[in-house]
Amino acid sequence: MTVKDSFPKVLTLESKFPCYRSVAKMGAKIGDSIVLVNASEVEAIMKSVKKNKLIPIYEICGLVSKKYNVKACCTLTTGIFIMIAANAAKEMEIEGKKNKNPYWCTPKAGGYLNEKYPGGSKAHKELLEKEGFKIIKRGKRYQVTDFSKYLVNP
Image 1 (cartoon, rainbow, N blue to C red):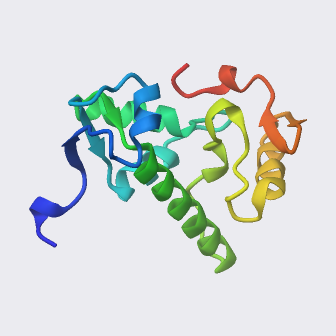
Image 2: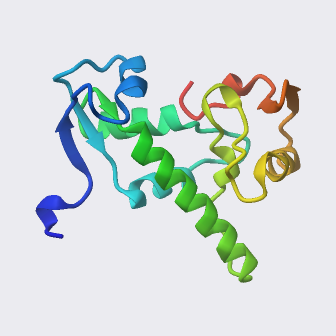
């Protein structure tokens, strides 16, 4: 892979892109520039979250989009990198190393907990409750109560 082929990569949005529907919800249209972010940028944003704050994927994408002056950020690659960062942080913790990534502060859109995080929704719930967040059950899913008041960039 050459430097030219590496991330971040700015692309012109096409309807065939796997992230098309989600970036269209953010206001991007076919022909707009979008960015495929790199994993280290996603992790750096996750690590910057202060105690008692939350940063869902759409806020991470908003910060990245603004940085690269594009309409949107690919939520698919961002979501994959969030999961990689969460699992790496948990792996470090298991190995007895200091975890500096509060991945549990990155819920899904709407403040819903991520069942794909290490330990599933139950572990995600416990980590958030340990920080003082109140979690409610909505059907089969869990959600941070009044999550919008805890957002990094409301």
